[in-house]
Length: 484
Image 1 (spheres, helix red, strand yellow):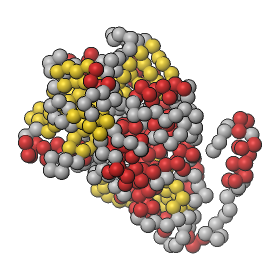
Image 2 (cartoon, one colour):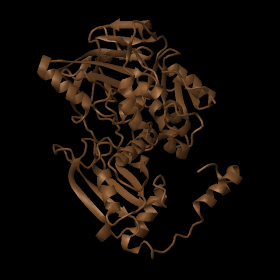
Image 3 (tube, rainbow, N blue to C red):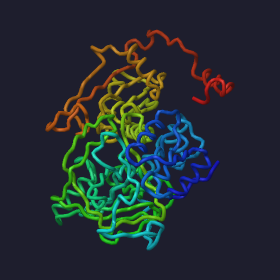
Image 4 (cartoon, one colour):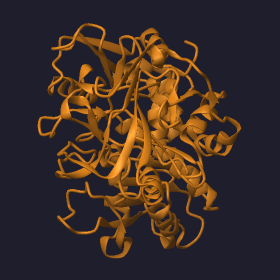
């Protein structure tokens, strides 16, 4: 088994190559072709990582990486859990891990250093331009080129110094010398920016545009607001992350990052952003004025690699990663509420890892299933853009959409077992949201469990025992398609 890579994208790539889980494509165009090739790749079972080189209009060596966490092996490697993972073993390995990493994060404060590979090249405005890199236009309907999809945007709370990293998309403007930073109003980074504006009239910011995908995972999932994502990464690694204070802002520049930019946001500095192919599968965010940063400093390695993680109609670049991580985080959060009898949780890719959550329970008392559903509908780890929570019995695999829908069709009475909740936490990218309306949504809790009053008399399922099915797979793995 290849060793876990250090916190460095190039070491990560070396390990992925040894796993035969990287494909290199030569000659793609930055305009739509990189994104389209990725879309084709995401449709494959267990898609490998894609590395693009010899990109049209750019010299060889300026590369773009996509699909970095699109299968169980790559995601297990990135989370330092192993390189021989299946979907099932990865979910099992992750149980309780996100909560433990968050609890341990304070033990791994960042380690400030004075040098690192990211300082191999430093450019200042006006020479700093993101379009010196092969920044893609990912989707045909995008309003421009997006350097920040697989990014981590660093902000701080000016009162407490608490650091946050968020995966906020960044569109290139003015020949690469400006980039918009699209932060949802409810996100931690946006709250930090508002505080800085009120206090000093501007907000400092750094952003990595290429790094070990572990940082993207931490930045793109709901790490608790009191926990620094860099310290969270340190807890996953078991050692602190090396950072270099930015020349202008003092905010962190990860020492092994491929590319990092630095500057300030101002309340009146905005650019028209979008449209962009969203994780919902639509160009639903429209076009609006968004806070923009002039690139004051640009740090990058020789032959830098831009990390891409474009969303789109699921499955997309990070939908598998988000499904796995959200499932583990929601599972931990439900356990933390004291809910008994929890078997498993899965946040389905078809809902972008947010909009469709299946929860399996061992029913122990009347109302148990509804309790599990309502808790899952509003937990902080699950509340944003959640639309459907389906609660199933423990004999149903929540990871299987076929099994979940089967349970709904055979154990749900629509008149009795579907409850709707109104004015819950939605998003401006919801294609159902009308222009100018607040970003509320409505969600349903669906009880797809056998009725409590009929647990003993409900018809038995016409299926072989799961242990026997697993034994058949162990005896004939090649003929029957491998491990479950």
